[in-house]
Image (cartoon, rainbow, N blue to C red; front, top):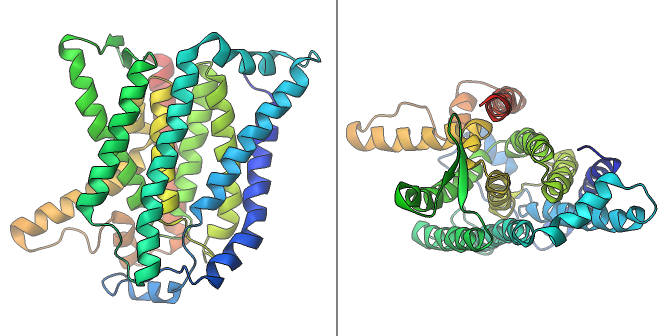
Length: 348
């Protein structure tokens, strides 16, 4: 179901995020929270040295404030007969505690992942090096957050998952129990894949705009009213952030932002009970992560490289593609994946 409330929420997310750049970016410059560029990266990235990081706070705040505005408007109009979507939105969580639990769990997953990213960015900014948390520390914290999220989802009533050609599958007994360890790795992997995608001005932002648009459509089609409002808010907020993040970027989202996006995109997939669709809708994230795995594995065995540099967006940079071309082509790939996911969702 489509409503003016979703449009207003998206516009609010855009305005809040875009406007926050006038305050937040100068603040980051003042406290010297800038990016440190490694020597192993493309040489032309050196001119990005000192660009403010932690811009993820901008679209996080824009998203959450826009959702609050959306719900406030829903309360305002529901008593005046404007009614259909507002009424369904407000009754969704009162009628189903599991929907409320899962909604809150999704937001908390994104915020907890964001906090891990913030710690990583903070260490980088303070030590002035492009190294943050140790890989083992980050992995432990991410898996812990993912495990807590899955436990909450189970307690909140997630006892089945949807598979193409099969439909709903029980995940509380028998072979269905394999879902949970696979889901744990799934959340960890895709969250980090979104993080890997953030390496070119506007890339992670643009790709996630496409993916969020898909999940907006999916939440509407599956009658997840709360998540349709949340995806609308994020969509607007990311468009507002792109004003500052497009090439040449005035601010980077940092791990603060990319980890938030990784957590919330995963939450969208679980919220509509179709996490498997993220393999299609998130195909670009998957390609980015796979390129790193292939590069590292092949190098360890042969001491040679398949790609000029990984993740794969850097390979195309080294081949002479402009950052804008990479963003455009990769966003198109993401769109094709999202379109495929929508067809699978509707036809299978």
